[in-house]
Image (cartoon, rainbow, N blue to C red):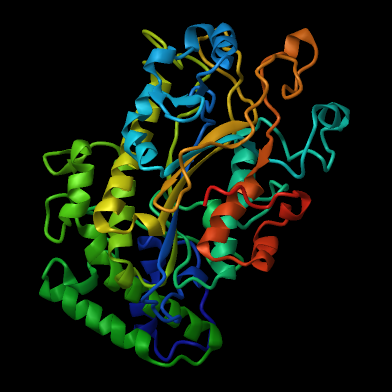
Amino acid sequence: MTHHPHAPRSMDRRRWLLGSGATLAGALGTGTLSNLLLGARPAYAADYKALVCLFMYGGNDGFNTVVPTDTRYDQYAAVRKDLAIPKASLVNLAGINYGLHPSLAALSTAWADGKLAPVLNLGTLNSPLTKDQYRAAASSSDLLPDNLFSHSDQQILWETGTSDSLTRTGWGGRASEALATANPVISVAGSTRFGLSSAQTPLVLPDPGATFGAYNLQPKDLTNNASNTARKKAIDSLYAQAQDAALADAYAAAQRNAFSVSDRLASTVAVTPGGPGALAAIDSAFAPLITNNTLKTGLAKQLYQVAKLIAANGTVQGNRQIFFASIDSFDTHANQVTGGPTTGAHADLLKEVGDALGAFYAAMKNLGMAEAVTAFTQSDFGRTFTPNNSNGTDHAWGSNHLVVGGAVKGGTSYGTFPTLTLGGPDDVGKDSWELQGRWIPTTSVDQYAATMLGWFGATDTQLATVLPNLKNFATKKLGFL
């Protein structure tokens, strides 16, 4: 940052500011001054709710994630061929005509509890769309989302809840802003478009056990180092002094708040399984994913961190918190299955998702907070229903997603499953060369997001602001919450 030439009171003070705390924003993993201005709003003590977004980057094969088990299974198996999951291997979703990929077995408890809901054929839409409208529309038509089948563009549309891939803010960030949450979106998966608002970027936290704070200025002096303590005290004193320029005052305020956030959260961030401050309610839930007090997968680390922050919601502050986690590598063009339909890259990825989500749900139950926390999946798009020649699938559109939590009205599915006919009413293809089963979504990201944000506390007016395309859909909320 360039300082106003008349702002510093002395060169020594300026050097202190530039040489130490001036890099704190970067050390905290954040991107702008505005997102560090936390703590001006009061903490809330009651009516706590949290949303946890899990983004599966690369385009998850939703039609091997949720599979029909009625007469449609034969259609499924005939087209999917070597990719088809044997019906006997599917996780039984008792009461409905669908099963889950066997790698998602850890979610069986949530289904048995009535707290898991599949949402079918979900995707980016500007408004309801028929095949005839799709076929007649030009690629630049306002009827179609920007750049269909493109990873980067479709990720942006899922994260922003808009029809324009140039949109800067995400629907999580806009919801946080509309509801004036005490914190911005909290990401355990790096910076994300989902959490951007007009004034804030996400608060980015590292893995469990990491130091959250500026180097050698550890919050609350976690290292018990006298030099660090003295240095931190001196810098706090410098930032407390009034500045001559408004910009310098804003900068100092941002640094004070950044230190305040790290002071408040560093101890929670640092907790690891079995270590000081660890909660048995969380550690026991994640036990299958812990070896020698170390979490075994990246997603397990992320959701363990989120579980700790939810348990410490009074310290985190605010009665509404939005979290973002992610896992990548779902772009399974080749070797989606290897050695059989239930093993391979996709099975491994879904196992990481299922195990981590299952442990997270169990942790929320153990904490007595399941009713207050809803987790949900997102992904770029689905995959082609027809396999390609590399034992994989290619970019498509509509897909199936999962919502889990104590407030979820489970035991049934939501949305409309596509007609599994290549070239049929839900397939974008018409000519023989394009009959690949790229399903036109029958439910939009807007309706999906509105359902969760309505439960979260957003009014209809706020939903219209956060989700600008929601007005185009007669049904605003899907009913799973």
